[in-house]
Amino acid sequence: MAEFETPTEAVEAAKKTYAAGYRNLNAYSPYPIHELWHAIGVHKSILPYIILGGGLLGGIGGFLMQWYLLTIDYPINVGGKPSNIMSWPAWVPITFECVILAASISAVVGMIFLNKLPQPYHPVFNVERFALASRDHFYLAIKTDDEKFEYEETKSFLKSLNPNEVFDVQE
View 1 (cartoon, rainbow, N blue to C red):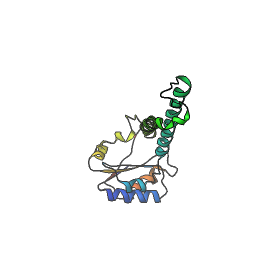
View 2 (cartoon, rainbow, N blue to C red):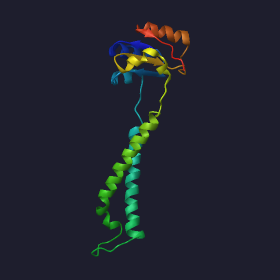
View 3 (cartoon, rainbow, N blue to C red):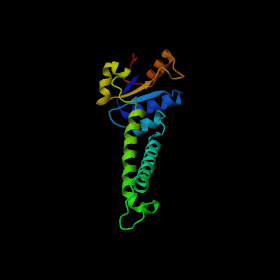
């Protein structure tokens, strides 16, 4: 793991690292840097599709629940109005609320699973100076399960990026 002073240095180092063929990278910074995400090759998330699926299931479930309750389980004739599928306009508000509820629940659950939470421990916490990542320093880590990872070669490559310091992360 390499430590950098500025976000510009970290982004340039990440671009060089990705260009060198390393793919299993991670970057740590005190605030979001979108250029850094793109530099390490973070791809689009499947979270929007999870939310869309949750919303669709919620809407379909809410609509079918009202249809079943009002036409089969407990039909009530109010003012001679039809109690079948033809009364769908009255069901729109509840269907909409079911869409919102299911989409928001699937968003929270999807984020928890995609972010691999809860994760109270991570090996980078073993590096004493990593506490600066929440203040004013930027870190770029190459994981050992990367296809191109060779300890000495990777360490010399990280040193060639002119970081403040290069650390070994012990698990």
